Image 1 (tube, rainbow, N blue to C red):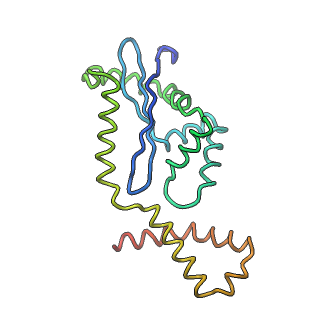
Image 2: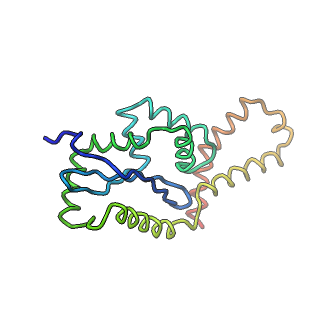
Image 3: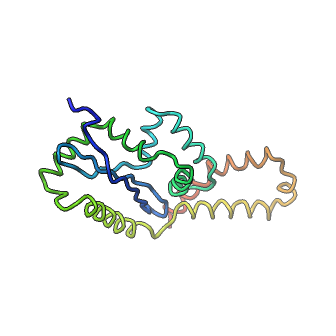
Length: 198
């Protein structure tokens, strides 16, 4: 049985992938074991699911930040910026994630070693990963779904103000909250219909 402390993690890095206009974060790190190493990646989404189970306090903190950000889409780039400003221990969280997935790490180290995937250096390997992600995002970044839904919501609100000015002017704070709740449920569904028919 390999002790988790026998695997050393270095070269923590972060890649931001633009998927259909929504930014998604990938955390990259290199585990070393007995002179061999591999390049490992975990998405922000999977890391958050892991934290919800193994470190609920940190997961709750991240979700609190997420709820404070208005609009549609993943908003992971904005969440990441906030976490970095507050010196949130992202690297430690990623290391803990892979310590809990030690079997996968060892298998990947063995696989990449046998196939000589990382013959040059981890820096070269990270450059290749970023190059691949960049090519992929260029192929999928022509449509920003999050911005489209934001604009759709603004259009609906503008229409309501124009058609029902008296009612909208008499809105109480609770009324705005109810409207926001309805829009957050309905706008994505309306957007999907428009997107599928375009």
